[in-house]
Image 1 (spheres, one colour):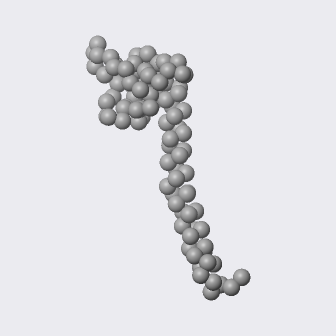
Image 2: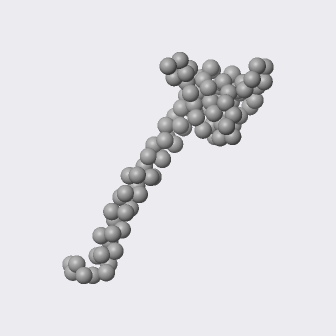
Image 3: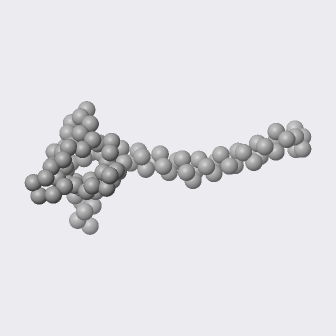
Length: 98
């Protein structure tokens, strides 16, 4: 293989760039999404959640695995149904105590 070949030079630049993109951007993001999905699937009553709109609330009723909604309390005697897909953070009861 001739090292002066333009295709070879393009590959020597493109492959490291793709590897850097994968390890610095795509892989960490997919790991964060997987962790959030796992936390949302394991919600329990009393966990604090943050919606993508920035609303914080405490889980009052956690739904079954097939139900896309949960019931959260955002103030005293104010309960809101929230779609699980809109949750951006889950803070478990044990993490809140620390």
